[in-house]
Amino acid sequence: DFSAMAESKGEGKYDDDDPKGSGGGSNFMENELLMIVAGEAESKLFKPDSELMRFVSANAEEWIPAVEGERDGSGSPMKLMGGWRSLHNEYLNIMESWLTHMVESNGGTLSDFMNDARRALGGGQGFLFEDENYHEFVESINAMGDFEVFHSFMMKHAARAHK
Image (cartoon, rainbow, N blue to C red; front, top):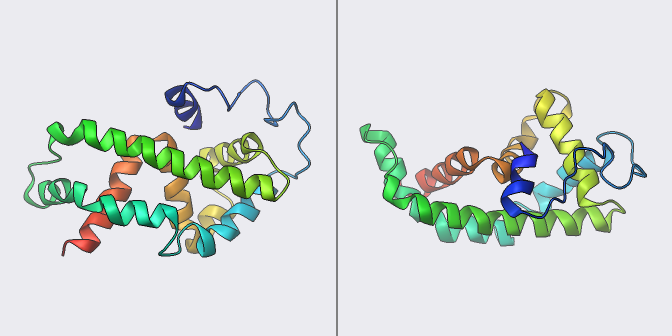
């Protein structure tokens, strides 16, 4: 839920009372901006030397105790939650910065994009869900507004690095 992200950031950027997110004056067809950004994510957001992937690589080891806890049944150590939440805030900043740059370079606004994403992810259908190439993009967007998704995302990367 992206409204949770807006509340957690305390900035109110994603206004549900404005369905187009920009005073109702979006220049994009529904999901058009989302498709553009999703298409560029693979080559820019997820490349190994991107800011996001450097962040993931640098911090994945923080989730090794959670990976081990999942394997042995003890679960994620609650004492690490504060650090993980702090890293989630860093993740939000990286994603928001990248998304803002991408949508603005394509003539959109972050509100336009987030409204498209909210509709697409809320419905759980459409091109993002039909094409497995967008799985990581969907997961990374979901992880912005849902700490549990972020936690799972980081655990997955930690498990890959800690086999």
